[in-house]
Length: 314
Image 1 (tube, rainbow, N blue to C red):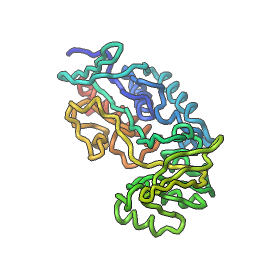
Image 2 (cartoon, rainbow, N blue to C red; image 1 turned 120 degrees about the vertical axis):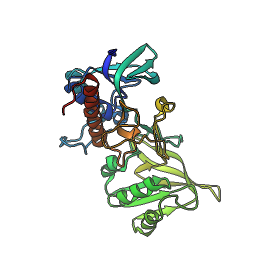
Image 3 (tube, helix red, strand yellow; image 1 turned 180 degrees about the horizontal axis):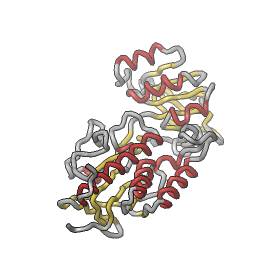
Image 4 (tube, one colour; image 1 turned 90 degrees about the horizontal axis):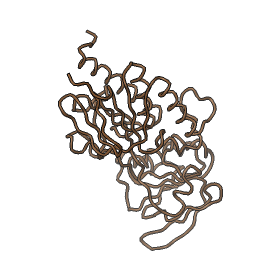
């Protein structure tokens, strides 16, 4: 049997990837994590993380990510900054090409996450983490009792608006079209809510403020009229883009949004290939879920590798 460079290679070092790295290393696997940017993924932009179990006081996403990285390394995982350019499988071995070389493994965990779709308007990037957010559960409680603006017309926008309506003094939900694309039952609950003001045919054009969001510029697109509105927070839910370029030629099953489908063991339809975190069609995208899915994927990968070595517990 040809032995690869590593037992397990994890692509992506967000919460899912780092969770998988820790559990893989603790299972006595040789583990390599490949991350093109900084370890932590989208957690890095979180100003105050307060809903992760075990943290009674808020912690910055940067510190949280550092601790996860340190913990994974402590157990023996190797973390390398490199961009993966190709992934393929030859018999029982995966080959991963990067800018700096090629690596092989028995198992691979895809933990590349998903990127939020952005509006690319003035102020959006500047105020991200300072009143602009893409996660109501994460950041809504910081603006309790204040006025919030939500952008979007799908299930996520409507669902998150309902959540925020329990926290905000007032929620304004804007959508660029004349009706929601969300499920009718969910859209109906939003329209019936006393604390949510829905404005159709309205677009967000600019976000302004000082150290945090103070005001937005809105466009009534039918009248082509601009006006300003004072708000304390802007939540944008216009979809996300799963980072699945690497597996497109492998025949991996995905849902209509492009998210990878797996079973409860995080297994894809390809033996030895697993997926975890926001790149997967998970029903709830939170750090704690991503870390847990990473742990499951690593555990499943360990059992798969034991089978290859003929050491599976029976």
